[in-house]
Image (tube, rainbow, N blue to C red; front, side, top):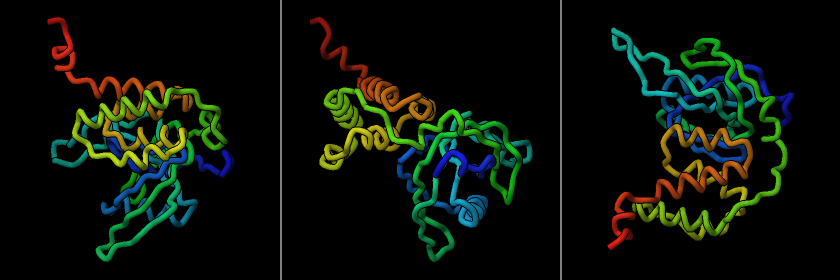
Length: 219
């Protein structure tokens, strides 16, 4: 897919603390009627969906109706690359990340889901081959191990060890349970090398326990 193939308007799937990166694979369960409608419309077209994070918690009006949360400015376009329809009418699908986009303005609701005008010109390089990577893989994996141990996460280290550098820098930001703002910072990193630096900092910060200093401080 080229820059010219990206539509100027796209249906949005806002999900907090869910990150899709270019060339990443994101599994989704679709069960709300509005997002089933989004899926149906995407399948009838170019199979594209705009993944983006809400900026805050969902709000309600005086009558208890949900208000649309404001969205971050940057999201990612995903293409539906696999899909299974369940007996209950819900869907399991996989999105493959194509490129990031800048949200220009929302254009209202269509069949219950949000649509927006988007611009991908600032992220055209997402569609091309990656540049050379320069980061300390051993240091990153050491930080990841400490992070997982400190939180009691089970990890398939044999799978992670076999990932090439680019896959590692796509997969870890998507699967690590960072808060929304930190996920967004990883998404908005200008390059893979910038993302590597941001990810390294987040892993080292999140893997540090307050009692670490106390246990290793002066006697």
